[in-house]
Amino acid sequence: MNRRQILSALPAAAFVTPAFAQEWPTGPVRGIVPFAAGSATDTVARLFGERMRDVLGQPVVIENRAGANGLIGAEAVARATPDGQTVLFGTNSTNAAANALFRRVPFDMERDFIPVSTLCSVPLLVAVAANSRYRTLRELLDAARARPDAVTFASASASQRVASEMLASMAGVKMLHVPYRSSPNAVQDLISGRVDVFVADQAVILPGVQGGQLRPLAVTTRQRSAQLPDVAPVAEQGLPDYELFAWFVLCVPAGTPARAIERLNAAVRHAAADATLRERLGSGFGMQVRASTPEEAREFTRAETAKWTNAIRAAGIEPE
Image (cartoon, rainbow, N blue to C red; front, top):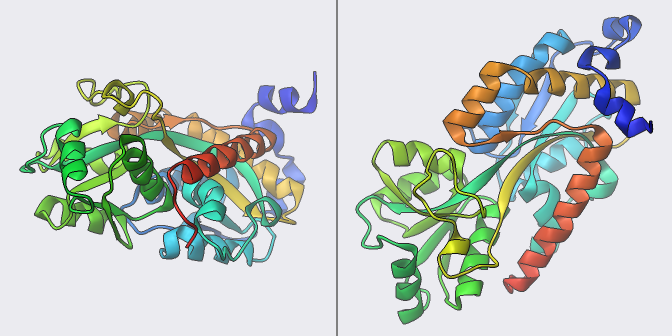
């Protein structure tokens, strides 16, 4: 059995020695969320952080550092003291798409961070306001085809922009990009009609759908959402090669001691096994909880970086 298999087989408690449990962490763990309060990342961080305390013996204090598509918060962690006391609740935006979207990224995701564990994944939804004139994805794309740049789309993260640009590129249409600082702000403008469409994490869109304020036109994964089984994938609506999903990962600054990484990993595994957390993220937001070893998390982020880079280039997005 190799090291990865051993780590996968061990229970969470096996990662922690009594001596180390007394010496780390020495105080609250600072959990940086690179997006605004109320975002999908914020929801994931707060639920995981609450359960991680059981293993860490210290609270995970969530700090929202929104801005620049997640780069501000991620940079704060990259520059933090590598002692395990500061962690990043990262996403595919910060950990996979940033290098292909921006000319100047203030950190190197491969060199400056160590992945601790994957956390969960979630499909995105193509959504419009409940009273929108566009009742189907075909109607939306036909309108964009007839009047280039007349249909506006919101984005508050790199993944949301890529998902929208990829949709437009594959459909052979042009839509006008309207950037937002946070997903909740984009949702409010979508509901009020200030923007036409928003492709965002199901966790962001679902409350508005359930409240009757938003209408989902498509899901971005090939599989239908358990929460919205009647909403067809984009791939079933004329674009068979379209597929994207969002994900979340816990990272620490490069140079963090291995013992801190192991204990953080044990804390994530403990949280991921919690029935209440799985129910809230699964039934409430359509997320699939997926804890991993650090090695598996690194391999996953590398593969996803290649996938998102290819998607960005295929969509013709020029780095900003």
